[in-house]
Image 1 (cartoon, rainbow, N blue to C red):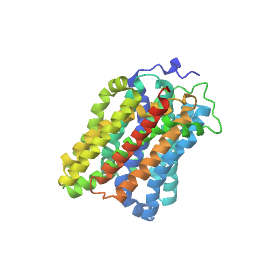
Image 2: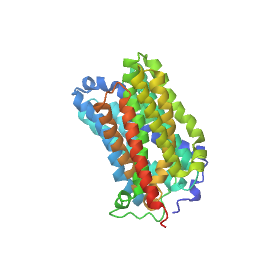
Image 3: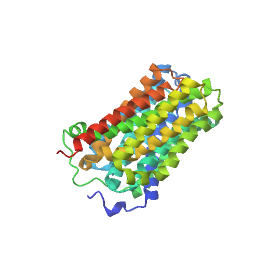
Image 4: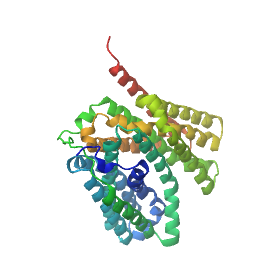
Length: 399
């Protein structure tokens, strides 16, 4: 089947309504659950360590599971992986709401993560199949990045409100209920897009691991997503504990960074058309470096405040959108015949770098200051700039 089959002849808004819910739900299942984590040991009659396992297992499986489902989607297609993953996610969510003891709860969270991972792989492999050579891909990737910025900001608030009004089980019922219409929509409208030439091989990951463009753009995506992860991890301690913000003031200040990403997304397609993939990535990394420098200056010269901590993040938010707009296409450009495997490795590497590198930055440096964010963003941006320099040197015509 061609990757440009008429069966996928849908408008961009329709395609976004079809694909975006699966991207959002995979992240929401992590963030909406956070407010009730402290109460879960008492509810399930277990230890805090076991409840922490429900967070860790979800994060690990969300990343590593893509290494399994990427090759599977190359073999059997995107649609069955998407439908199966969404069905498992919804079923596990409803069953979690019925859980009363720790062991079933942990197992069901693991299954929920498997479903989320499969749906993510199928979604992004489909984007690659259909939009790789079309300008709409820039809009899709950048809009996905901007939408995901709201999930960590609003997910915990939604979880707290649901738990307070209806009890903790309502959180998982809500995840299941939100998945059902997205799943039914996909059953009707999500047609297969796997290219006929997609023939998986036993060593399907090796060409990607040897590819300099793949590593360059994957590291760029890791720099962008990790920057937002560290901002999310440090912002409550900086703004609430040290700057004295109320929870509402913090939420509003935090949301301005997401708003900056949304606004930038509106113009991302024009920037990419003008600068190209490598030029856009260079400018994305430059914005991260500028924002990191502003954070460092603010940290040295004054107390934490909106202007010393949040405003520099606006600059970095622009860089995140620039990078997210081109990273996937740049990393996967040479691997259209194995897009599922390529997408899986791309997200797996990114998730490992972000989770390990970002966590080390927060723990190793003072998590109630701007230093973790400034150091992570600047270090990753420099690494990506070096990789881009090597890529340009390799592609330069020989005299």
